[in-house]
Length: 107
Image 1 (cartoon, helix red, strand yellow):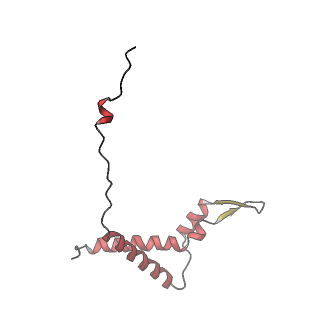
Image 2 (tube, rainbow, N blue to C red):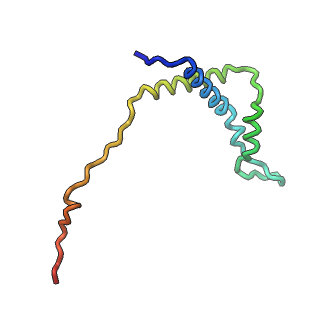
Image 3 (tube, rainbow, N blue to C red):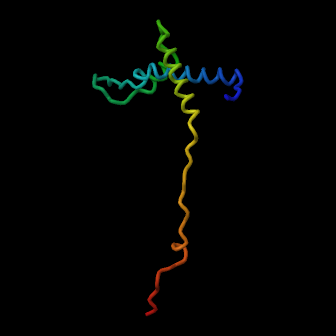
């Protein structure tokens, strides 16, 4: 049986997933290497270009790819939330290391 989720929480989840999907769809533009003034590639993306793309998201003629990406992310999130949490196991300390079992030579 599934737990009841408020409509506000469900909408916020879809909104976060939509924002992540939009970023995924333009990741190649966000990570594009910069071209220096002399025309050589610097290999580093310019953060100002990335911010510009995020603030002025390029128009989409067909939103099917966005809807598909959102849907895929929501399915993956649901699968991950159904997995049992992983627990860390630690081994107990051995008493022999605390007893001082080393022999001393009284010379």
